[in-house]
Image (tube, rainbow, N blue to C red; front, side, top):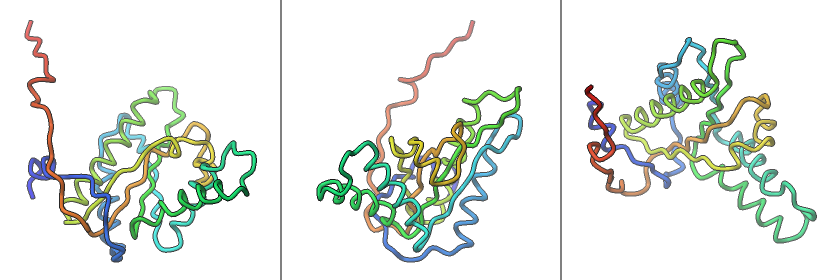
Length: 190
């Protein structure tokens, strides 16, 4: 698959089978990530591959975050909420948690570190698609919660930037739709 085809046909695949994914395939996906551009070659990405019972690490973090700030965590409605959050970690056979660990160097601009990790995620998604697998990059408030950092041993200045749920697609690829690039482009010639 050429790069233009991969870019135009890649879609978020939120429904996958529980069929195992070979370790070598996961390694290939992560290897593509580390070739993302990153200013000053800081390589600010960290990957946590969660499979089997290891997905429970994410599930437990999501449950803890769902209960954060709740007065009576043992109330039935809160227990159900925590269990629903925990189950999210098991929607695919593999979840790759991707974190940004910004350099402390004085010559490094923090936002560029996050941009590099986002580029790494795009490399992963394109590689996954080219391999015929499905993936969805899930983000949201729980990613950025301090309890998520704590669960994965990240520093306060680090950020979990999302979870790539990876598997064999169990749905039809949706059609893509984007605005014409010209409608978002301003040419400044002089």
